[in-house]
Length: 592
Image 1: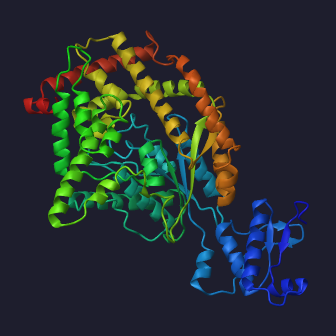
Image 2: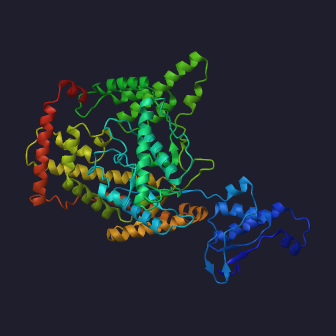
Image 3: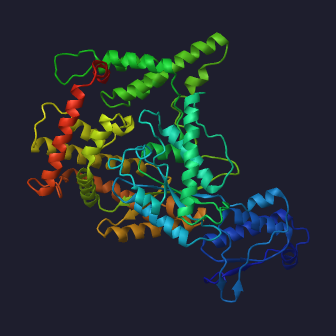
């Protein structure tokens, strides 16, 4: 049977094995090990394994095998029929060995590649093809802007109508534009959502709120909203209904998004960076402002005493010096972050020294590169089988054209009006105001000496918007090429949207059906796999991208569409500038 592809019947029996080999005193551990590794060898080669036997020790081997492999298939094959393994064991360890790790699917990709469409299609496939190991799927958004209510066009958020068909969790969970929300808060919400979908016991995943009662109450409010959204999503997907509200079916989380830091925190865990104290934040801001206001030479391009600021940070310790020297010139934001950590260490050291406690360990642990609390680094009974995928365009030049077209479509849909209304109403979140699209729009609205029907200024806005988006797409590709946890799934950009979305969803469906060992050995870690080749091809194509040039498709000068968009843009600019001129002096001072 080993010479062909027919099913292999494995009858692990201690008695038969002893009699056949004439071994009267064969140790039971040898039988268990032999059965276990024999089954691994057969299953890893893609064979159907038909297991039968009632000897207790051998069943323990089968249980260990089943806990690391997919359950024995339940199909008829020739005259052989497989059935669920019946275990004559009652110990908790034997039962836990059979427990399958719940799957969590993560889908990333560059802007405009079709992540949400692929995730939606995958959820439909999972819903249509449910069995004991494949539950229905629900999308969990990993987007730093979509979490806020109010923003829509600039966030590429699915519409309310689309979400009534395909639910998206962690969308519209933060109401106030001034509510603090970052990677730590999102990761906390994402872990909470994942546990709820998988019906796992709740654990403390607070990620340190520093005993801040306001943040804690905000977290509770978001979690209450998440609970309601999960219940609504399950009804939409037909998992529960109004007549039967029994909620005992786990749902596969399909995390999808392009915010790199959010996905890194979720998959690999939070970094070892120290949370700065309020006093340290204030000191760092004061110090960085001082150096930014220093004049260096007579050059007009000079902006602050960067070299002086670097020397100051280098004097605070060797680790801070190393981090500062990695920064790009005039990266004041990250330099300030390093200062915040340095001042925090100093503050805690002084406190610990006064209390007689050891404070050197805080400094020693800094910037170690270690992360904790992620899905792939968790431990215990609730480990996850995390399958991460990166949707990679097979032709970066063609993908850039699609990116540019999306930017034009966003402007056509009313990005400028949305930005104006949210900003003037004080409802544009700080995170969104820095995001690509909103940031370039704000620059266009607040430009000096604006004129109506200024084609050059408008086309410059379009160019800056599209260029920034393409550059962000490039950074996404670079980021995930370095992350070996992600399997690259090629997207045939030359095909129509529906065809390439269906093909990518089907490929992911195939990959998640593999056993964990097959997935790792054949796909994720195999240097000759399709994923590895796609990753390398993507990197190689980067060399030709320097020849790419923007080609306007919709916002063509003198076209009717262009006239309508520019008329609206001029109206928004005049409204924006007028409101800014009438702002109180204190606000203007704060803005400056």
